[in-house]
Length: 231
Image (tube, rainbow, N blue to C red; front, side, top):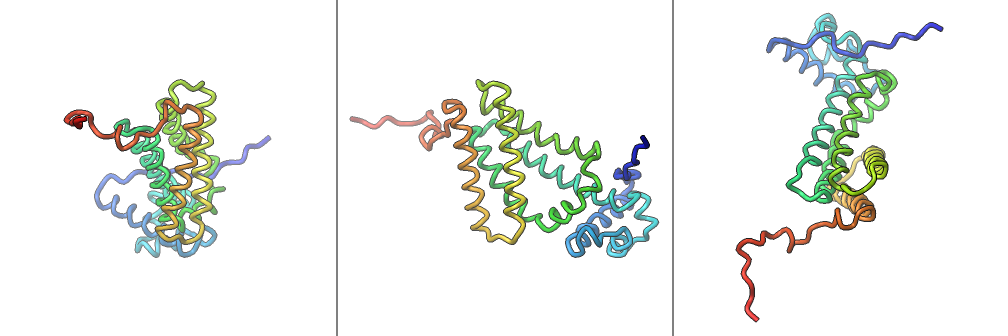
């Protein structure tokens, strides 16, 4: 049986000089604007080139087609999300539940801020969702949660940690996507993120109460220098 050839989505080459780096940056900025205003269905290389003020030929030096541009935008979005996950979850100076709570708030805010472009990129997902690059990018978030779970639930069976990581990651992504599909006020965002963080923390506490018990103000306060009150 003849295999269907996939659409190339990788960039043709990486910019090496300041001028070419600026051209790529202009193309990507224009692509974000076209995508947000026109949507994925009307997104074309010609529109992007016109908005960026470059020729289509110059654009094709770096991006072979519109799928490559869209995938680059999506890859950049994945990279930002991955950096957010790793930066917060790997900060072992904070207790696990504090990290998880901070991550939920940061992620929901990010989803709402980037909603227009993210929704448009979702419409274009068939162009690249089965690509090896896409699978590799999405696996990064899974690794971040997996590593975090080993610290948050050190005594739990591996299967339980895997299930918990998958549940939190999929719920966070799906709920964030649905919540951000319409404009939200800052107070709404904080209230929603707070409720989700409460739910996530309660779930982890139910799996390992002693390991994940949140610190109180008293336990956070350094013991050194504390004066004992007289009777």
